[in-house]
Amino acid sequence: MATAYEHILFEQAEGVVTVTINRPDKLNALSPHSLGELSHAMDRVRDEGSARAVLLTGAGRAFCSGADLSATRNDDGPIDMGAGLETGFNPLLERIRRLPVPLVTAVNGAAAGGGCGYALAGDIVIAARSAYFLQPFANIGLVPDVGSTWLLPRLAGRARATAMMMLGERISAEQALDWGMIWQVVDDGELMTAARAMALRLAAGPTVAYGLMRQAITDGLSTTLTESLARERRDQFVAGRSEDHGEGVRAFLEKRRPAFRGR
Image (tube, rainbow, N blue to C red; front, side, top):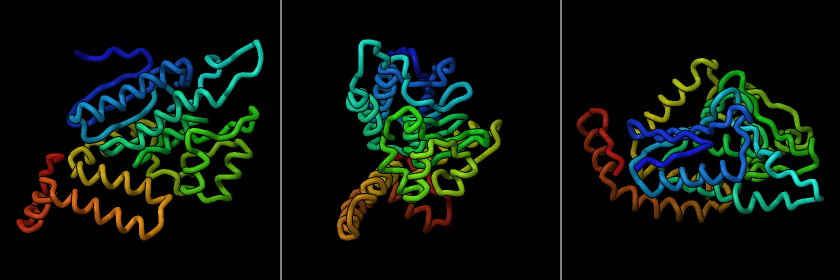
């Protein structure tokens, strides 16, 4: 039976699961309920095993504007702003990072705060020309979160990441492309067509190898060369026993395109 969601849309077709954050009136700001639904969606992808790629985007004119501050307001005094990270934002990012299939993020409009972290967590990030990335935390006396202090210096370099976080200024899609933060910029009207084409391309690929690849890339950012070499050896053993590897070799020898089945 299909699961009913309130704050997201979940659609599956041709091996691609499309998850859309669907609070356009809130610029897709994330409440605890939203985070719970997104986590549930990622668990479905992992557990059901029928998806071969995930496409994550936002409805309306924003990808995601970060935390829904109205849901965390407390007029009785200070609250623990880290608690929501521990119970909602961080577990979702971990789920995204450990997906067994490739993730494409289609960034429409603002990717701000925690939304910036989720946007950049995609394996392939495609942005509309009007999109922008923003770390606004300093503007409200907070520190960057949702993995931004770990990921941004690795994508854009320490100097650019530091300025982006401390100055709290918008980074345009074109600038993000120039900095190496994202893969591609397309005209606004072409975003979903381009993102879906990319997701379909990945869904037709060697899913076992892709899953191993995305974990090795993430883990490799924090490991030594020796550890990465050992990881590659273990992963190559697993990938080499997949049906898709056999099909890939046959297709190469027969000079045809491989027909990968994701196994």
